[in-house]
Image (cartoon, rainbow, N blue to C red; front, side, top):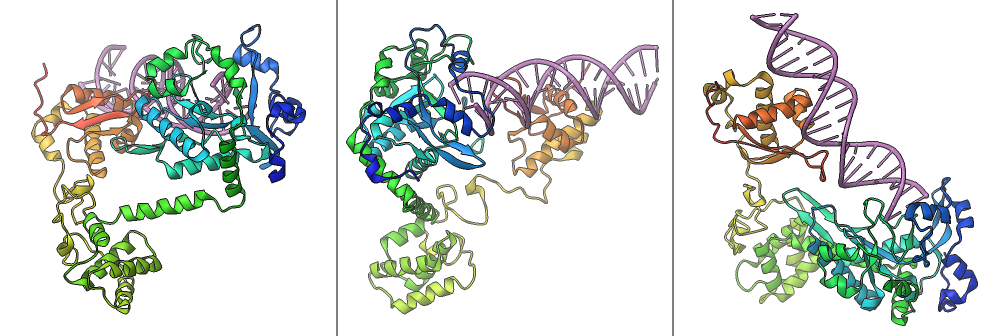
Length: 496
DNA sequence: AGCGCTAGAGGCTTTCTGCC
DNA sequence: GGCAGAAAGCCTCTAGCGCT
């Protein structure tokens, strides 16, 4: 690995060293030789073609600032060099700008805390959608090294382990990490003052923002800023100086990374512990924290042991925690008694629900399904799912015909209607509850063609049997259809 | 970042089938 | 032959992904 502590000190400014200066700016020729596939030479013509630079006097400072690594036969074979980038995605309109901006500021805080950076050393760059945070190579004294991308990914992983960049949407049922790590591939990134975005007919610039602008601007204001080139940044982007504190912090991280004593591993372990603890039921967690004052200690001991095992802790973990817990009790038990209890808790798998004789005496929320987020009982309503009684028909096909729909609906309409009801049941939905499905899925369920489903859904909606919002397959956002049955099933209207 | 390609969304058009 | 319902295939379009 290209890691040599003595070597680090010789680099104050890359421009002082001709060899590094060469590396830093344009080393296209050699680069092309080691390129894995036959790629287009990244020459000025390509830049001209892509970015339309030709004849533009305003653009003079083009840096190839992230020449990260070269890969041959799956092996990283050449040193890479580049700015440290973070990519925060907006993910279409799923996530609001406020959220994206908030996560970005979270990352800014983390960078300031971890790498001792100042606001002006972190450059937000946006084209009006998501944005990137760029820490210039000069600031941290980044050295060319083999596998630099992997190290950058490590830094992003560390940030992810220590801060939460996920956003969830319960309705859609997904959770995504806004901090995109795909950018740490084998690619390269240009540091540009501005460029043209070919996706838009108008000129749209990828502009650096000041941290103040980034903090205080709405998405519309940022889009406005992106309309025009901001030449005042040209000099700024060419002249960053090294920060000694950031240099040392970067050095420390690199040492951790290379010596495999990563802070990442520790952070992940700590996070895993927190996750386990968060699964402990609220009332039992309270008992565990506060210790036992009076009452059946042995019972409590056993319940806690089973609970800690349930959330995924090992025998040693549980024993250690319970011994510690026991010592906090007003009248501690003998250590051997605790060991015996833990051993019996691990003899077989116990299911101690909130309403069981063991847990109920300890339960302070009195097994209230509505109020307790960690309620665990036979009914799963507290988890947002109401069990469907399999014995009771959730839709009554006979009723559909008794109401007279049999004479009104075509064969495929009846098939599709029943498929909707079946879909409800399979997903654990209540009759009439809204769900999302695409035509082809429904067609498979109904045993009809997908084209038919499109027609039939409109018909059923016209007849007020369902509510139907067609999905958008060829619009700005791709979504499936939203369907809900009208319950109770209405009577058919008379058709002239 | 841009470029190029693909998957997959619903709609549209054509073809097939059965009935009168 | 005329008609209607259904199926199949094609069309159009964009987000997402991999590559550069």
